[in-house]
Image 1 (spheres, rainbow, N blue to C red):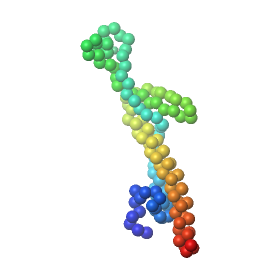
Image 2: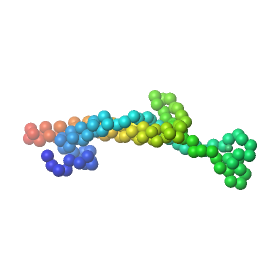
Image 3: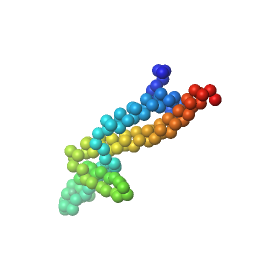
Image 4: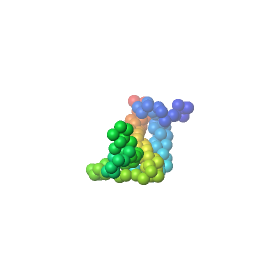
Length: 129
Ligand SMILES: [Zn+2]
């Protein structure tokens, strides 16, 4: 074992032990992910129907908002949901967790491919061919 076992070694440059160590880290990180949700959060500003409202001021209109909405597509179906102010931060965290899940899954698959390569390389070394 060397002291170069950092998770930042490029895939393709790892030895078998490094791949296995990173796989274990990913599985642990996946277990530690909190609640998640797909999508993205956007801010909206609206104009109302009330006559003489500040949102329709001819010189300096001030629209109402921000209103926050979550948009996402899941299993082929697109949805948009408004978020109450107190829902915004928890939803930001869920959206970030979902993004992290996808990154970890992608890395796990890459490491699965890498593991296969590293195992073959070490077998080759061991057999002396
Ligand atoms: Zn208004």
